[in-house]
Image 1: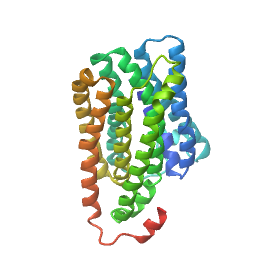
Image 2: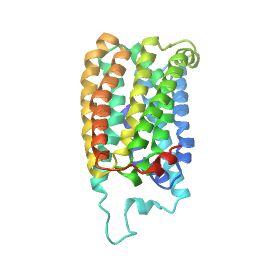
Image 3: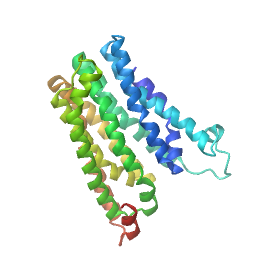
Image 4: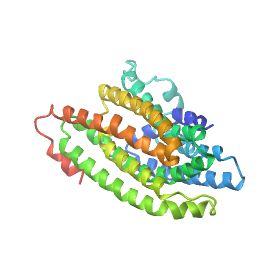
Length: 307
């Protein structure tokens, strides 16, 4: 049930890429706000309907699905693309080699969200329903916080794409800035998630401090990783990221199964923190440093572009 809306959102996700590629990041940001709002509203309605706690896991994927659909049709209206242009490429006689990038990107687009969504599945089988419900409510408020970091990082994508290996100064600055931003958002999240969850669930559920800290730590690690994620976007680098994200998924599920019976909802989140740190953040930082070592002198204009 959790995977169905997520699977449906994958083909519609091309709309977000079209908008970003045409420099309409602001539209993606505005529409993206609807995701957590829809997820929160879905959670509230399901609680009012006394739905089974396991059903609450559909809230976040449902929000993602609606955002993807809205972005898709917005892209069709605001760009020169038509539906048949997306389904069948007839604009050029020479077909571009998209699969070298598309296949790794597809793997990343599946493994990264699946790694996070698998937490609910693990909790459903290896923990109690109350732990799953607490996790689902906390996740609703984690998503908008991470979306802020993600959108900030995506704005760097075109700059990194143009500069290539001459991005050392901007990349280092991006890691520091995104890390600080992630820490601030994590502090706000830890402070507010308890009272807000108590409010929106009318006292039926409350996110404990240990789970809040776990999600805050995940937010910081994910924020620090985004700079490398948007830098390594060539076909070979995307293939490397696909391998990392696949390793993250396997490690995350294994650790979640081990920690869920011991720590409950917090265990699966700590599993995500460890998996992202070991399988994605550290390898991608090493790969990014080696990539930029091929450049003799950074382009100074990139530093000014980041200010």
